[in-house]
Image 1 (cartoon, rainbow, N blue to C red):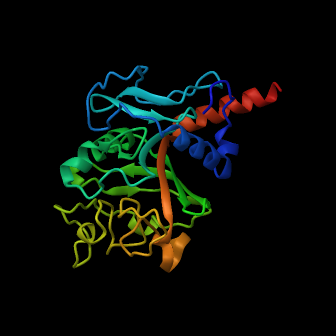
Image 2: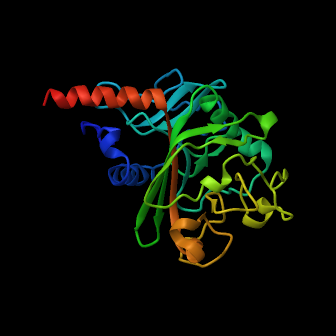
Length: 271
């Protein structure tokens, strides 16, 4: 979010206004990144946090912060209290990776990345989180999906998608059918399908007989139709891989989101 611009309360920002914010963040993210989700301290001038992205004082910074989850790790915070956990936008990062890579995380925080399954488990194990999925196609059409009870299991549970909560949004619910599924990668097939879905689609996901979504599939930025592309079936139906070229998944804890809402309600009453 641009410096000096007041944050939009999530009661208003959920949906199309949050899409505008994410598009601004992506434009900003064209610069070189120094933060790596799978790495240690990168030297980037970041602030030290506990387990939450900053949001106080109505105007919050957007950028890379160190949080204490499974060790001190850099994460990308959006200034609204939300933490980005997956981002795709130019095909520069390889998402066809093994179990260890998906467990630890990979990529560049200002570019394409996946935060890491172990960090997602540590973040969500004690409290459900809100999950926000942003999608944009090659024609700049945008959609979103929002879930209010996102939780990821432990490695012993194969980082299963334990809970999602209720869906709302404009993209349709393409993740609900994956609820309860274990995570699968090219070298660890936990699907209910006879086929290795990770091998077919070229990514890692909570596949359910492959299923209705895969945001780590092969990247195509020229409108190519390919069943192995980035998938959100309820939006693009049978031509869904045609043009999804921008993806962001973000989370915020329920308690933190409630605090943000209360703060903004109090602020609004003073206006």
